[in-house]
Length: 178
Image 1 (cartoon, rainbow, N blue to C red):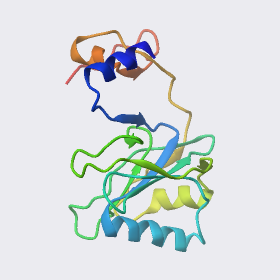
Image 2 (image 1 turned 180 degrees about the vertical axis):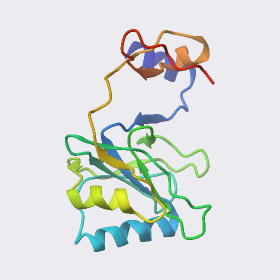
Image 3 (image 1 turned 90 degrees about the vertical axis):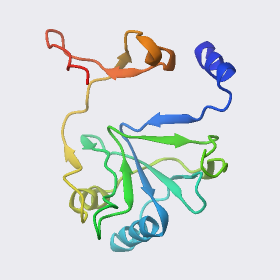
């Protein structure tokens, strides 16, 4: 709490972000993303009610789910630059989302909790859809969970931001920076 208080004392306009990890966030961008999310829900006969945030862009939302035990979902963005590619981002391991009460720099609109509901677990059908979606890659697969996070050694600017990184097994050299 002391460090966070110091951060907001220096930068009171800072926003809040969260590394997703085992949380899987559907982030439909624009009309195409909302249409893709609605089409998925219709195809699967509906999706479980879950926590929903409105984002800084009018009409955009984050639908927050939890990965089932033993399923590792990779974060990936829709391939909007490819004609016919998905406009639905899936934020999970390797991705992050901005959280309420952050304010969009582009619109000045605050993120807000729209549906304060317990976070639901992805259904097996939702996991299957993620792995086979058009324009997607194998994004969900059963495998062991990654190692827990530990605080990184303080270095430069990132030290002031409180960076976290995964623990590495002993005896294994760290990846080169770059």
